[in-house]
Length: 63
Picture 1 (tube, helix red, strand yellow):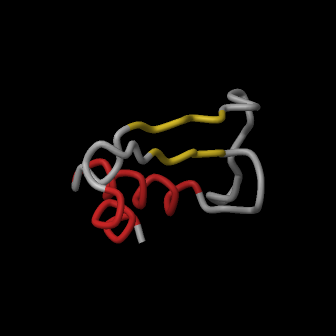
Picture 2: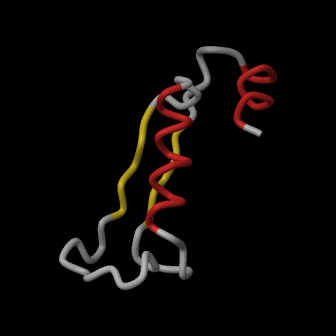
């Protein structure tokens, strides 16, 4: 999806990813892996970290 947006909008259009680690029952490892991939492939221009509860304890990888 990100590559399609980039093709349609060009390099001057800024694309970012918001990483919210507090809700939706997401797996921390999955978020980490997906984010690492888009950063490694330089698909986004910035990463927005929404760290609402930075002291939250992760149990069984679910945040």
